[in-house]
Length: 304
Picture 1: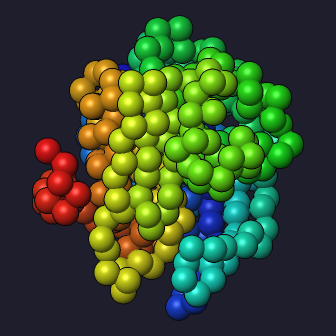
Picture 2: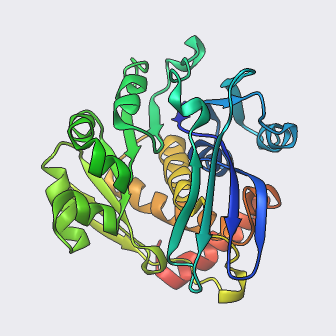
């Protein structure tokens, strides 16, 4: 079933306790689309500037099943850029700089051939922009949005409007607590359900994720990666969302059981992303690698 993602494509500078890299591929839409492409066709709607590295374009186009007709390259503009530093345990980071570039301009246009997309993921950006893009998909059946603490703090009204029009939302436990003023993840998610969506996925980092649906609750642990494999957590959440939505689009429905299985696919794909910088962790694997790790994860998590 047609799956589309709207969001950012960027260039990242990342500092970890063991390494520093500059100019690596990043952005919410890039990680999501790369991950989802392993499970089925995915369309990407985003914009970059004329300074976007050619090797980043080749890397993204190298993922089979990923359509980039909705990727606008604006020669006179600058690509979104972000820099961050992770602390010793990699669970905490600080932003060093953010250069909005094309994100300060008009959102990208949704190509006509994308407007029949039935499954839509609105990756992290201003909720007003997410809402505007959402209305381009007239045949949408299931829409899921991501958000972050910045928008909860400065665009709460727009976010509340968006939540009334989406089927699901993905956020982490600190964001769910900020939005609802409820520290418990499940209780916070239940409060978010009252704002409009049918389900909420709360990411809990090394403690996995919880799905709170109007039909029930499901949880999955994190994939048990040895510590030495964890190189860079950047993009793990977007990869997780790509695996989740890729599975949902492949099955063609968003019921509780399908979403629960999607949590496993998202968790496993994210486990590859954190093993390298940028998209390298996803670029070097094949579907057989994912299937093998899914079987391992199902055994550990006792998922059927």
